[in-house]
Amino acid sequence: MELLIAIDGGGTRTRTVVFNREGQRLAEVESGPSNHLTYNRREVRDNLQAGIVVALHKCGARAEHVRLVAAGLAGVDFDGEGRQEALAILDRAGYTNVIALGDMVTAHYGALGGEPGVLALAGTGSVTLARGMAGNWIKVDGWGYLLGDEGSAFWIGRQALSSLCKVLDGRLENGPLTLAVSERLHLRSFAEVVAFTYGSGRIPPEIPTLSILVDEAAEAGDPLAKRILQDAGEALAACTSAAARQAALGANFRVSYAGAVLRGSRTVRQAFRNALPEATVTPPAHEPVVGAYILGCRELGWEPNLP
Image 1 (cartoon, rainbow, N blue to C red):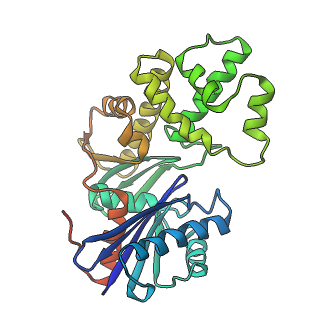
Image 2 (image 1 turned 135 degrees about the horizontal axis):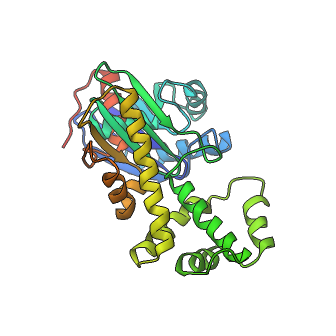
């Protein structure tokens, strides 16, 4: 038995899929976050290790059957920055035959097959990656939650939480979205908001999950939620246009998307499309973990077997 393990590791969850040489999915597992830039290295190692161990157990395989682990990770940049640390973490988890790539690269290969075009990735964080006709890569945003990641789940959640602050200040009228945020997080005063946001000394993991509340409120007609999601889609489109311009893709360039925000929110996706009249926007051909599988096959000299 020869197996390839493909990983899509982000800031909220990690997906691990076991493929055999024929391209069949033998097992799939979700574990916790695996971005070593924002989470404790031991926690990241444990999440990666758990995903692999459980996935192998589910399909009755053993570690010696694994020819390669192909990991697309949020803590690795498109140019390989952060790769050595990711490899060291996987090595400590017991795996040495590994390739570690940026999750934006594996997402691009999944969505566009690595062909020229732009991939907007909006999950917990956000980044836009373009590939030019000559195979060159251009990245826009991906600056992280303090400096950028516009249009991401974290960015959307932060807008929702900031809106609640304005309600508590008397600067904004309470509405469906801010009421939902207050109820979800049990925040009804300045002291409670400050304690929630800063008290633990780490980024509250609940902030990006608020993007789901924003989407639900927008679908129900809340104008504040609609505006936040409209801004998110337009911000992602601006990054896409900038990446296409720098990659010299010309007119009518190809665009696709990945991540829970663009795939899950109709409002964000429509705003994104509307702001890119010059582009051909298509749904991703495959999910990011399949991009990791494709690149893993390339490393092993296997022919990818895609549906």
